[in-house]
Length: 99
Image (cartoon, rainbow, N blue to C red; front, top):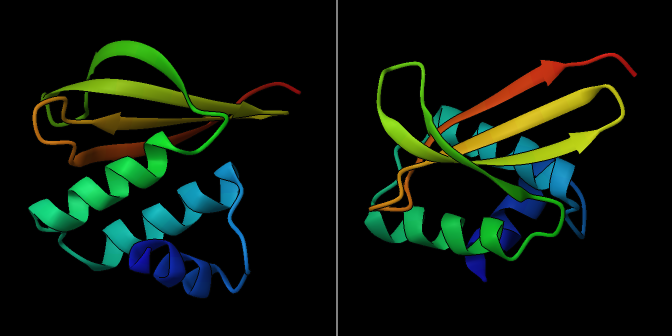
């Protein structure tokens, strides 16, 4: 939909793999405050993305409960934290690991 097109434009690519989608989502969240419709659209887009796996319940850095989804590649672990009730993204963290 339109959100995917916006994120593809932001990343200057005709298609988004999981890593680029997470980069684009981080950029979006750094620059915009999403409403309920936009949060739901982003949650659907992320849910349809291959490579994210559920990692259970977590508490984000602000003390809010959330559901974590993890994407791992060589040397990098990215954790997306979402509010299970609203689908809003609470955080996106990148951890560099040993390759």
